[in-house]
Length: 436
Image 1 (cartoon, rainbow, N blue to C red):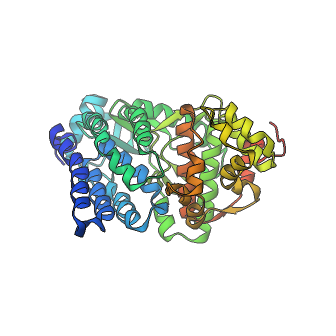
Image 2: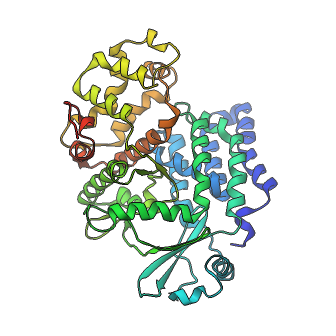
Image 3: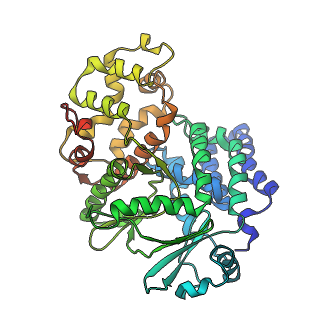
């Protein structure tokens, strides 16, 4: 990979993104191509997003998490292609890596390492990882950002607006404009590895010392805007557990992932916004290691009270409170409450609270399709009901994170004590008036 391969010409990158809606439109006009249009568009979209990397790849990763509930003709090209793209990224030459390290850690950067392997062991959307040994003898991972990645991402975020209508065409039940806007609001922080280091240190303080035996977060050794040095970790990626893991591995991973998602707001007052399977490693001792903290949000008060109160009311069966809570907390606005009954609010929310009504629950792809599938059809009663609800902007990312986690848990398809885990940190959420 040359220094220019990530950044490239903004005109060339814009042309690639623009080619997707143009090709889709041409296929739609051709009767012979119309039947295969969705699949062909999905295949082209996956290929273009992967080649462009940067901000475009971030959208692709977000889509791939929800691939199990997409129609088969869309899910196959998106999930299969996108899950493999990171591993296929060509490496940055050693000379380019050394120039980045010179600028970021100083020309004497070699004195900080006992060993440094010029051959990368992993690649990501905006950088690659090298194995090294820190000056104290500790094995470390050195993440080096691709030269020009910052310009590439900023260009992609501008150009992604071009393909938003096509993303919406592929998945009518999800507001793709909101998805792209969320990524644009958060992805720029990922360009400064000092911000990532700050997040990682906060999570390491909560999960890096064994207080929570099911989880581990690597220690940070050094950081600069374009280089991050952290503890070397090993394990089986969650994607491999999903594809080939044993029942025991799946169950251990499911419980640990649930702990991470619900303990983080309580203990760290932050949330990891990218529950992509590539960001989790299961060690031989059953501990789930979390990596890549570039995308995180602050939640100073933990999970928002409105979410806790709404879920608790559903679990408790307090139907008479639901409409009032939905209006009070901004989930129903614009006078739409006049067209809603408490029974409809309960019917809308009940599937999402179902896992908390059991001591153990198994998320499955079939369950996810049953719950979310009707919302993908704009003509279904559930979809029409859903349009009467809104999403307060300040809670959009939190809901996206939890939805993404549930999508990954559904692919693990393993029983875990979700009610118990959530009750430990948010007892009110499981109903029956629990308080802390």
